Image (cartoon, rainbow, N blue to C red; front, top):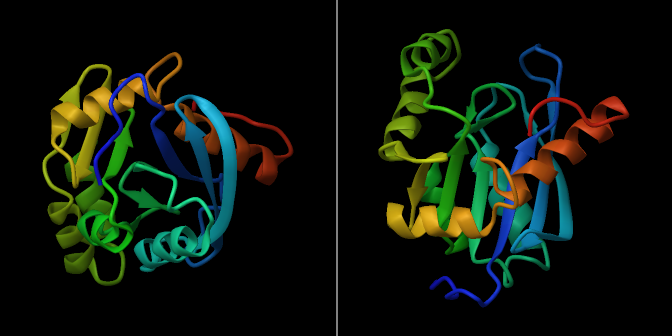
Length: 191
C-alpha cells in the first residue's frame, strides 16, 4: 500500500497496552486508536496475555474484524512487545494486514536486559527470533523505531505527519491515555 502524499490525510492505528499487574498469564488490555493525521477517529479494544505468545495473532484478528483496516495506511505499535514480553512478529503482522507496521520506542532499548528477561520465559529462542526478524532499530530524531513494509526515511516522514507535539505519534499517545484511564480510572504516565 502506498502512503498518501502530503497534504492528503494519512490514517494510522496505534496500539498500546494498558497498565497491568506484573503476574505472568493475566489478561492485559490493548487499546487501538485510529487517527486521521493527528485527529482521533476511532477505537479498538482487545486483550493479550502477559508474557504470552499470541500478540501478533490478536492484532491481526482485531484489525481484520474492524471497519478500520480498509482505511488505515500504517499500523503503529508502542514497542515490539505488549503485556510484558508478548513479542509481536512484525514482518508477519505486516504481511497479514498488508500494511507497513512500525514499532515506535521512546528511546533505544536495552537489548541485553531484554534478552536476559526473555531467557527466563517459556520459548526464549522463538521470542528472540521475533526480535531479530523485526529488523534494525532506526534512530531518526525524534523517533526510534523498527519498520516492516516501508523504508526508514518514508517511515520517519509519516511519523512526523502523525505527531502533533512531542515525540510520539498521536494515535499512540491517545492509545496510552485511553488504556490507562480505562484500567486505572484516570490517565497516567508518559504517553
